[in-house]
Length: 557
Image 1 (cartoon, rainbow, N blue to C red):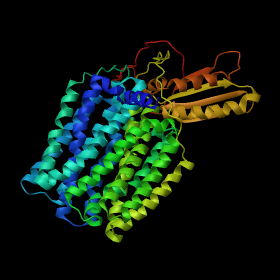
Image 2: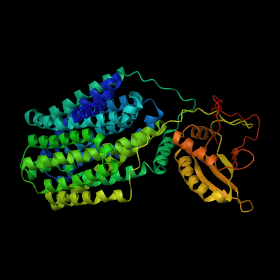
Image 3: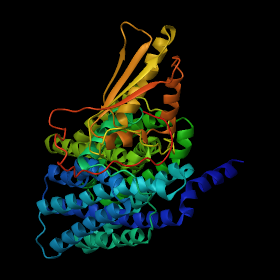
Image 4: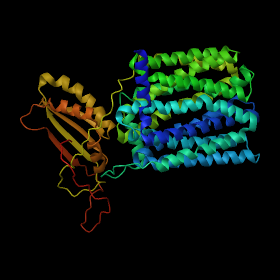
């Protein structure tokens, strides 16, 4: 019976690979991940040969992940606004250019520590642009029921590469030098270019114009800020990454100074970390079922801290390798569960930006943490820095007492395309601000319950684009409640009408049930006219985009 259950679990895990487009891009991502990790070994070891400063060695990882922290939100907004296939292709081409530049610089003998950091940063920029578009497109490539498995498979792809890529990279560097490692990375970008060219993405055109880039970034940030289920994941990702970044940041020094090894041992130690991560990725699905996401993440962070203590005091490659396997598995369980939660609970219109916020949190923690632990290693020593980081990691495990993970309920799209409200004014898509007022009549004995549910509605309105939300109660008529919020433009209001998920539509229906007036709920949509926005003469032309015409039925604010 147990073997049958295991077989069913394995079949479920591999189900997304039956989809041709996902199978091609997943296979190509395996090659590109191999190339990035081989290049990472080459860059880190080349840095140790050019300088003995621990902070410069740690900066190699900072340079690779800093672009994710700086640019991921821009990349997420671009992924949600433009064709995700084209965005991913652009990211890959930037990475190819960086890899070629690094290879040429090394081959002609002009490579310096700062050039290593510059080209590593460029390749990191390509990953920052590619990541949100690629991850957000997974939901377009596999059925919703297999989204969790597809996310886990992407993690496995990276960690299979992490398991063998660093070891292969170490042997390549030892046998042929860092230049060969850089060349391998450049070549391994090519399969992903082919896979993206073969993907015939079907995109349903929106009847509304795309958001401007800065407005899209703000919308994504507001969604995360006002989402009680996403916000704890982001905060805990930052804290865990800050504390847990020490092993990857100081891995070259662990191999060289604590274990007395060379590039081969450095690659093998990274490989041990990666093997543990692959094992951890396969454990994610059963751990989510029992003991659950919260307990699994907390346990993973505790195990990561304990494994770091072992690495700090071990002089045996075997013991260090086992500890790194445990650390890799613990790290992967936590990060994959966070990633699944983000992708599951984010609606499609903002998925790229929420994923970008998650990547920014993880990358920011890794980048800042790598710099901190590099400085600590330079000041106190490698073993001492890892010991302090291990203690910080154990303390980070207790954050879950205050920031618990929510149930990973899927953000099911409502599937509605509501008609634009009928208006009598001659407005355009850029007309605004638009003010919405909604009147409810609620019996006094239900006022407290109504107010509680309206707090949930406030978050829904705000994360879907509303500003200035307020709820007022009439002093002379206590049964009269007025909800008020506004939007910068008419187009922003129209976007808001079609963004709520099925769960948010159900929340609106619950609120409508409180209304006890003889007539329907009163909704007023008003155009606020600040001074200077009115066209005083009829002969003044309005070159703005015309308002979008109604296409479907439905009632909503």
